[in-house]
Image 1 (cartoon, rainbow, N blue to C red):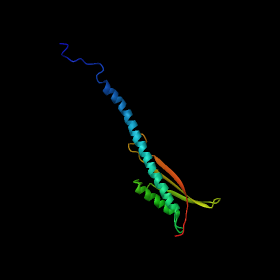
Image 2: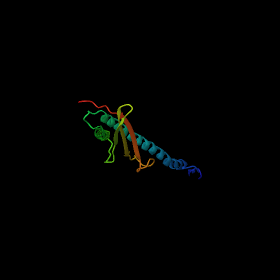
Image 3: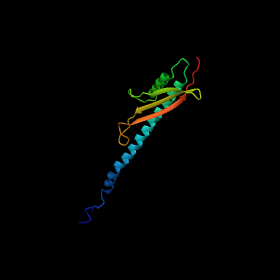
Image 4: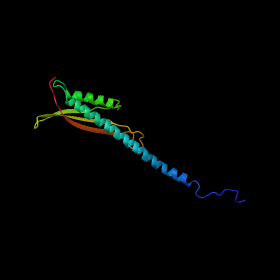
Length: 142
């Protein structure tokens, strides 16, 4: 009779238990990769928008306002890049004259709150990205 009943191995189900133990660790690593990639992608959009917007403000007619031009260009570039600010994007733009070189410089800074995709590794609140750039103002006569 003993040959008719299948014998049960003491290791039956061990692979399922091991998989169940390692799966959460693998998922945290996977979601961490996705979250950090998403944050770096968002930072690239912000940096590109700020750089292009600051450059737009630096090249204005002599009658134009570099600060207003740069701020509106930065916000337009963020919208064109697919970044939804929801009113929280406020670029800081200031210009100064460097006396020793007789040169005007436009300083642009952008700090924006960013949400992660899953929130498992990076978190969902309190994450802000900041980027800054400078551009020489080149005013020209129309």
